[in-house]
Length: 144
Image 1 (cartoon, rainbow, N blue to C red):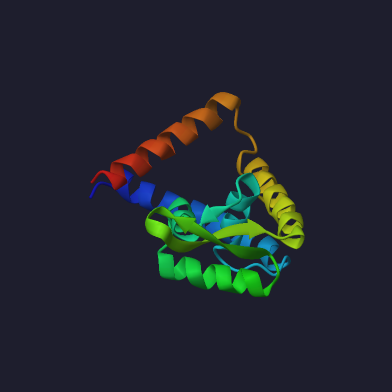
Image 2: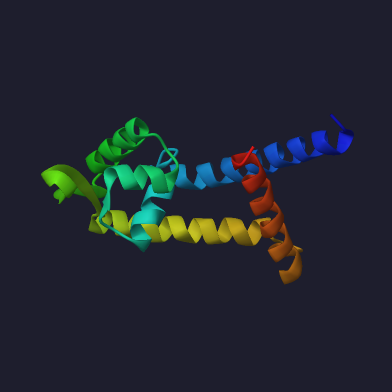
C-alpha cells in the first residue's frame, strides 16, 4: 500500500472521528443516542415511512431500526401507525410527535453548524470538489 493510500485512510478516519465526536457531544445534550439524529432528520423531511423503508433509507439493519424506533417512541419523539401494504400485510408507518419535530429542528441546526465549522476556510469551489471526491470514494467502495 502506498503512503498516499495510507494517508487517505488516516485522513478519512480522523475527519469522521472528529466530526462524530463534536456532533455526538451536541446530540447528547438533546438526550439523543447514535442513530437517532439521522432518523429525526429523515422524518422531518418526509414522515410516514414504513419501518422497513426507513431502515433502508438510513442504511441500518431492520433489527437496529426496531430498537432505535422503540427507544425514540419511549422518549416521545415518534409514534407508529398501522399501515397496510400489498398483499394485505400490516406494517408500521413512522411519524414525528410535536416533541420530535422540535428536536429535529435542533438536530438540523447542529448539522448546519457542524457543516459550517467543517468548511471553514474553503471556497465554494473547494466545497463542491470535496463532496464530489467523497461521493466518488463512496461509489468506488460500494461497487468494489
